[in-house]
Length: 239
Image (cartoon, rainbow, N blue to C red; front, side, top):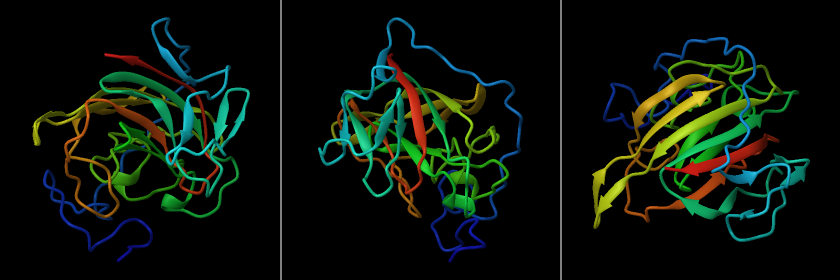
């Protein structure tokens, strides 16, 4: 059951805390002002995935040609067209990207500026407009979705560009057994919001995360959740 759009009271309990998945009683991340906008040009050893030269090397997840809008290095979700992902696959990495939710907004909670950054096509860092917009704690912008809320809410106002800097350590498997879980560090607008956070498994909605064996490299996926979220300046460095 939903609780005023701020979560669910009929989901399973997470193994690492005394809260349910998307628990409405889980404390909200405190709000911080992130200061002046931060942007990062790609370092010389980076692989640029989205920049001034366009969005070459991206397709929809079913292989279709892109239906998302691309203009002057800015990617915009075309609602209903489906998620997109890179042709490139990589594992441990430093990833930078910038995103902006629509300036005009309607609705509340998960219904405003919703998208997601899926590392290795499986593990989601949430994108959401949480400027003066509360939601369930593990669904905030910068959350490891359904698992770990961000340490703070560092969102800028609707329509403004925001940045994620992500250090990703992929999980390790020994045959079909998990040998080492993934960890992730995330900076949102230059503010640390995940610090060497242990990922509990692949992303789901209202379900417990769990690991399934997969290759050591995977694609970067951006989510179509029905909102015209924009992305720009996406690059990574393999670690």
